[in-house]
Image (cartoon, rainbow, N blue to C red; front, side):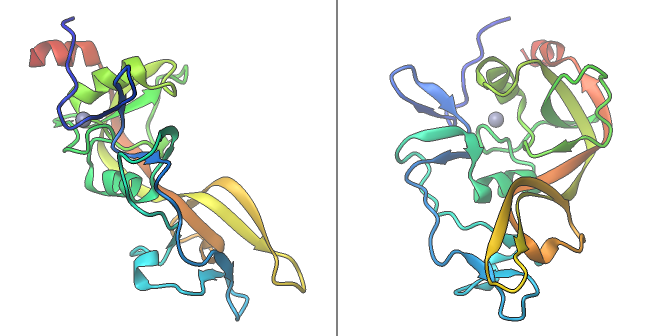
Length: 217
Ligand SMILES: [Zn+2]
């Protein structure tokens, strides 16, 4: 297979010019404003200085993070909440930020092979990819140990990934439970701080990435 060059829109970093995904978090991007606290009515969490922009259409509260992509060092393990959410919601390639690949079989996602080869309904925090970046990510992404290309005709917005807070009885202290998944509409929504948008892959087909790339060439 011929070496595929990264589209010019993929940011690279360091002397080895490693590709850095569009959704990656950079060290100069920091949280701002007040931290989450319990609401005065003890019915959930909020920011004391909250604005409508802190919540999505489902009234879910989101973590705050400034945007300065390309500044400082990239953290390939932690996506930026705004760019991850934008890529999931608008079906943008998580690597280059342009439109993700879409064919008759649906949108292209890269998953880790789970042994069963059945991805119907699988929940993914990883946004889709374009075909060029799929080849790039298969080689470079440290999280893809056994990459498999899955197309989904209906990637359904399912919910969020983030931190669930629970109150401590009789105090205003909150206990944080990190790395939790929560579907939209769940009764614990008022106590959740979202950091990533989760889609459920529906109407899935496992596809041959090499064959698709060859057809493209
Ligand atoms: Zn791409």
